[in-house]
Length: 104
Image 1 (tube, rainbow, N blue to C red):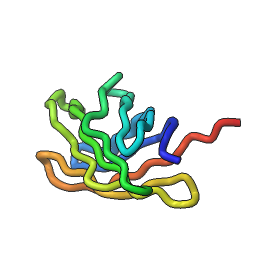
Image 2: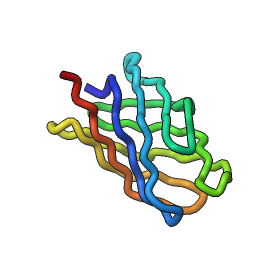
Image 3: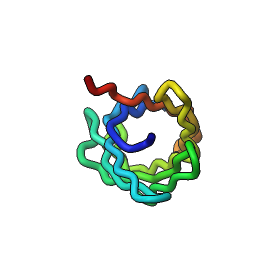
Image 4: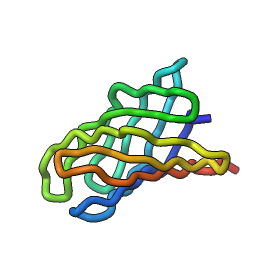
């Protein structure tokens, strides 16, 4: 299930980026936010779900203060509540990962 809170991360030439990703599924689409050290309450745009694969975009600021739209090309969920895939930015394509927070 994609719904819920995830730790979303990717590494670019500017370093490692780690954010909380809150996801709310609505049929084959989803909404949500990204929150991290530099970016807070950033809206997830164009969230699409196809099985265990998600795609979305978000307008983030880099550590140097430059705004950049990241496009998550694919994040595929596995049985262990983790996702891996690729993002695209104006700086290039990078591996991305997400891990679902476990609620006890």
